[in-house]
Image (cartoon, rainbow, N blue to C red; front, side, top):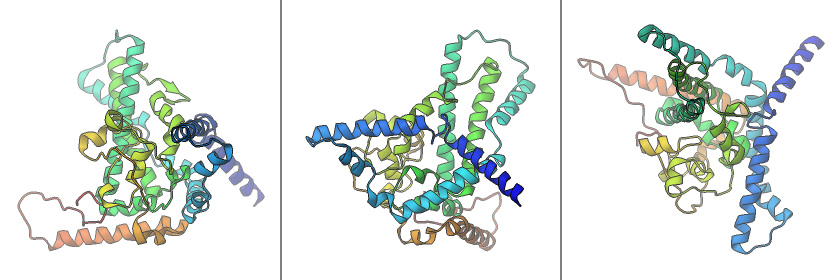
Length: 349
């Protein structure tokens, strides 16, 4: 009994150390960078308004008790603990990593076109191209996963857990159903694996991105500055061309809005280019007062148990209705595709 307890404690402690290490989104560099960016933003806003700058004012502005003590924030903390500290390793075991997809692509291209000779491109050009392409592939994997979890009613039932947050904090990032986490991991791994497979075949094993804290340098720069502010109450908006290229915190707050004009907008993570290309972009040109959540549905997700279990039954109901619709339709020649049942937040309407 004691051996089992010691083993479990060692496992959780090791996981906690990995969550808070320097290269983690919840490590000191990322959290410190977000805090520094917030301080600079606070000083600039107060200076423009001619208001006094103080430590107490900063704390009240950035860490308001109405948000930190909100029941939604308490559920965020419980789900973050389970998803990040307890279950993260299990999620990783269910994902096919980008390295496996990369090796499969290299093998396929070699079989189809034969081996490639050494590249004469300068290394800085290869690394720069790899950094950009990996970022675009990561963002596309994130965007298409996010799109599908909004567009397909059965998948929306899982994503609804994330959108049920009534206030946003940095922990809301992991207010996410395990099915969604695993799906996003696999799609992103597939997309980045394809890119690095093609890059490795074309330029050799040295084709990799510039890194910062063991991650894509461009993506890590986003995390070190405004990444954690996506889920916050601070209105920091990119407008004009910048608002069409990059996701600001205001972009993502609009994504969480419970107003119909904001539904299914801004599906990217760090970049807005795929939203811009596919017509799901909403640029926050001016301040908008936003409320969050999914209406009265949020009461169904007030515990960890309901957040984890209820989406399965709701998803099953959608699948049963979809299957029943297929049986009731008259037979036609050739294949047909059934559209998902309409939902208040699907992309169908």
